Image (cartoon, rainbow, N blue to C red; front, side, top):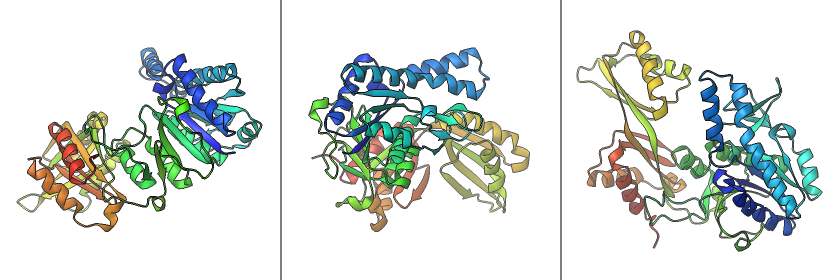
Length: 420
């Protein structure tokens, strides 16, 4: 018997008919003799409605009560799926996060999972019962309050449950049939990857790919949880059940890079539209000035990504350009304006009309010239690079938003990712 954790997102459980389809996927694994835990999100649109009601009640609200309200969406889904499974003759019960318990820290609205004791769950699963678990939520034990994990948190819930159960695989069912080399809506020739390394998936998730939540990939990588991305809209009887030790060519497996026999130099192209550029003009070129700029931003919990610093012609001043999330731009500007006297800059410019485009691949570690070919290809298309950042397995450039699709298509072809 394999232990399988199955996670279904909001579009997969958008109505009762789709929940019946999810139940058929679950029954396929049960009929194969597998032990199953299912993690579910709220029905599509439910969380947005709950958040809207909270904000209508009061823009300034208690984050603990916010969590109590928005967590109810997943509870509805879990109960409905358990009922449908029972009607199909499959023993099942719903579990809320606090009943397991999924223990979190005190950061309500963006809590991090601290521990998941899996003994009770494993006992019921071994007895043949399907555990239907509310995603996105746990309990903060000091005050015994529900805590939610932030948007996309059900992915993290699923991986955490898989760790607790020592599951053979964690299947993440979405509205796409795997991880692609880039967004197929922009590049129709994008290919589904049969396997991708944890490191590559982490970069893609953090750089704009919406398939998996970043924290879920981090957790899977730390605990080496084999994770698979699948489509819930494929007919349940068209998919083989999980068999211990067997692999299928369905979906995309997120795994150790050692499992990937043929490693391409570049595995994928990601892009993020939610970027904003901030430029601080003419600050003194002296030790400590960067700390004066980025210290207040850090204190305000504003993440800074790409940073470029240019020395001015007089040799005494410098210009600094960096990026933040577009939603954080107003706060970032306010923080910098408040700190103007301490920083001592001449002027402050910003733009949200930018896009970050990234090439990602573990093969870049052992191949030279990836960056040079990228910059030349963009230059040939007349695309100006505003900022650059790199890591061992990725290169990101900031460009004008108008050139986003052209850049993605150009780079996808450049690195041989187009399907035959």
